Length: 354
Image (cartoon, rainbow, N blue to C red; front, side):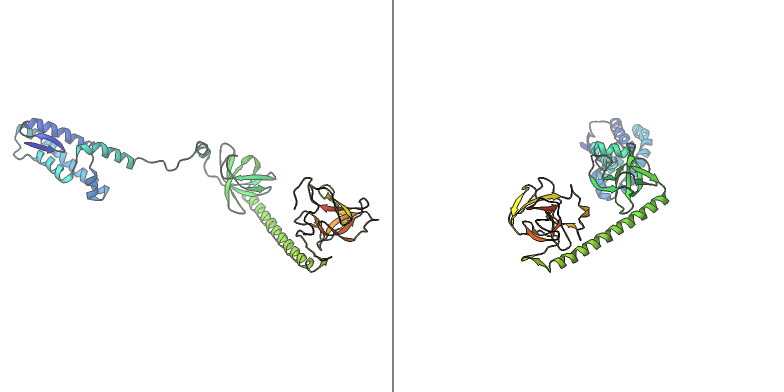
């Protein structure tokens, strides 16, 4: 008669009791030592890993009792074959199968062994290893401009640029000389080169931070005031016109399709030879131009929107208004050749200007 014990075919008629005991002992020892694990069927049946483990421990306890009965089984003194009945019960009710042991072992290892949480590059891994314990200190930027990067190397992207005197809280340092910092004014975190940071006390850092905040607020107020003033001047200039052309404080005039440009160099217009000179070469601080500013086309203008030009005093007197290829202009300088009009700009040679 063919019979299965733990998935192993046993010919109960053809083998004796001793052989059965040996076979069963091998299976039992494997179970006691934990080589044979419960199948997925058992795990699913119990819906809880803790319950499955408890059941397994209970069965192992019964196996240990069965070991003590081996002698009685072999000598035939045990009236009821509790030993073999136990294996039949384990096979039918618990579903422990030898063939599943390797698969269960692999699955158990996959579920219990720790997995790598995040993949990082060799460069990042090196920098993470170099980073030491958290520190509590402050640093102040000592150079004019310091790159504030996403990571501790020049290969990382620049997030912003810190100016001299900026204060940062130093969160940690690396052996390679980089500081992981938090900018005090914005709370933004990043990395900077430690050689351009001077460590200061918390008290000094707070004072410097307060100074920086005051400077920022002052600059914001000044910029706001400048914009408001320009807006008023733009509105005031737009109320006037010169020879049919509406005055513009900063916007480009469209008098001709081909006005004077840096590339062109010279142009004949309205009976004059136009040239240009730049404040980058001749600052012209003594010209006393009211509301002097640079317009969007690069020309230097006064508060009323007139382009500042130079002309010979015998050709065009100081303060004379005239039309140029660039738009309405006013003479603010007389150091120029006769018959010429020098347009005051902030151009560079060869620069493309519309």
